[in-house]
Amino acid sequence: MRLNYQGLQDKQAWEKAGVTLPKYDWKKICDTTEKNPVWIHFGAGNIFRGFIAGLQGRLLDAGFTDKGIIAAETFDYEIIDKIYNPHDSMTLMVSLKPDGSTDKAIIASIVRGVKADVDNAPEWERLQKIFTSPSLQMISYTITEKGYALKDMNGELLKVVQSDIAAGPGKPHHAMSITASLLHSRFKAGAFPVAVVSMDNCSHNGEKLRASVLEIANEWEKRGFVDKKFLSWISDESKVSFPWSMIDKITPRPADSVKNELISLGVEEMEPVITSRHTYIAPFVNAEVPQYLVIEDRFPNGRPALEKAGVYMTDRDTVNKTERMKVTTCLNPLHTALAVYGCLLGYEKIADEMKDSELKTLVERVGYQEGLPVVTNPGILDPRAFIDEVITQRLPNPFMPDTPQRIATDTSQKIPVRFGETLKSYQADPKLSPESLTAIPLALAGWLRYLLGVDDSGKEMQVSPDPMLSELQAALKTAKLGAPDSADGVLDPILANKNLFGVSLKEIGLAEKVEAIFKELLAGPGAVRKTLKKYLS
Image (tube, rainbow, N blue to C red):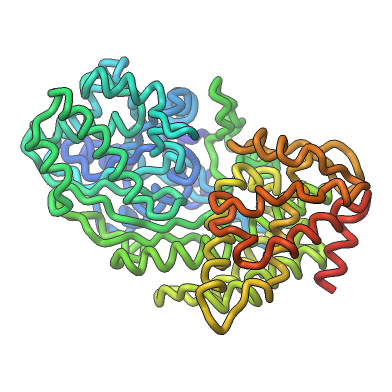
């Protein structure tokens, strides 16, 4: 069995292997979409293939649409060559259940993968044609938060952005410049309305996307590349909207166990590939079953009936509250706490950590005891039920190949939101006190201990990439395992840094507690486990 249009004609073989097939005809969908495209998505990776494209597949199955999605890739063109083209842009989606069983289905709602490469004339012409089509309703993104950034850590424009600004809309290379350029083409073709929708897992994603696109457009206007009418059009959200969204589904890297299962069933060419840009990707996507997508319902040119596929279509305030609930209380803080302590204790799977009584207690206290008192209730999802699902189903799923090492990446960028917002809420509520917290300070101290790059047995440990890693490790260099007093005074500037924690831990009265825990974690080999037992027993 081969994953492509021709291979899907052997329906009996796929059904015998327990794979659900699409009810629609991919070729017919391609024809109707090419003539009148409605949706193009930037970011051709797993969260798109396994979740977002699956939503459109549901609508196609139910007859709510006859159009598919066009996928565009701005970062790694090899994904199109090695994953999309050989398989007619189809994905074999494998849903991993906590009981060890899997659901398998073909997602065939993607009609084409396009390289968003201005230096590739045929591909760029395709994009121009799509963007100038009056039928286009939605441009969406999963390019990670970094994809929207125009500046470096020092606040200077990235070199690629500087070049794009100097060259004008004819030669864009950064994702935001590409977007601005293609929107300029749409404006010139008739100024047709459209929604530009970030679906990335970051706070106020629509705001970030809009700000970056407008900054590029403004710089071009200053240099005479575009006129003020274009700026007025792109700034008018009744014409070009930038809805906010909240997305939640874990789609980790392809698992060998899943690959082997598919091969044993007779599915050919399931080997993952590693591109020259270090993307690890396979013709299949493995992911957890729970998934959430909440989108602000502002689409000036119409939209797919996403609510019929399980998407919450709502207002901006509800999107913001849902995102805040997940990121600051009910999921992300739990993930970060597990990540840093999992690395220190030698774990390589999040699910295995949930069998550890201390770590399970830690995340329960972070979520239920310290998070829920200040949770933002969005109304469409119940916060306690959400945490229940996270702790009882999602984190303990042994078939989710997610690692603490992956989640520990870029922790310095996550801490201010994942914990800082809760700290601010405790500070602002006269009935609550930050000094009453224990699990959150334990998590923060654990992160600082993790940065030393030495595990709980005293062995050197790889620390995940982080833009502030070198700076933080330099600040902590005098703190040594086995010498708690070596930390005296070391943490003062770190704990007072509002950029790191969202607040100054000194000002809210938590610095002494975090420092005390940190010193306990430094006592020697085994001190991490001993400290966890002390505070969580």
